[in-house]
Length: 227
Image (cartoon, helix red, strand yellow):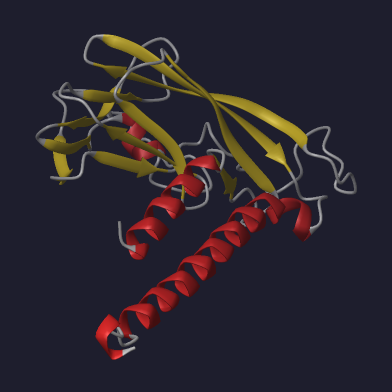
């Protein structure tokens, strides 16, 4: 195994150690953090993570369709379909309009959701979709109730749920949104710094080892009869 391959494998392993967290925009700052608590049921070929600030990202790693549900608590409004044929968004759904704005619910037309679905393909491959779901971040510009801006500890803001269906199996992603605005910069990013530092150290070690190997390979070999 070459040393670049070793570095790639090491970086991948270290990234897997970082919790599925992201900083939500809230009032467009880094004071809010979203963490995925659970994905139920377990064992489905569905990868869910937070990405790009406060986007929630669903990836279908199986052969059946993955349907994302809208905001209706009583029914699963199928507004995103992720499957072998690509990623499709129902532009006639209520959830489509609700998610048109990142920091507030978008205006929903009165006739949204009526009539046949208007699925449009937005991606052929890979089979993933990332978007700003209003259930996984704090959207208010004022501090959440009960939050103390001078408290350096992590303060819970709310719990959230995003429902989906894989094939005929319903599922739920549960998240927790915390306020970390009272923490110092080191407190907020300490874990990421430790992981990045470990990766950097190992890259340096592998680089030194690679230089040593090249020098050894370039050194002339003295035959026994020349000694």
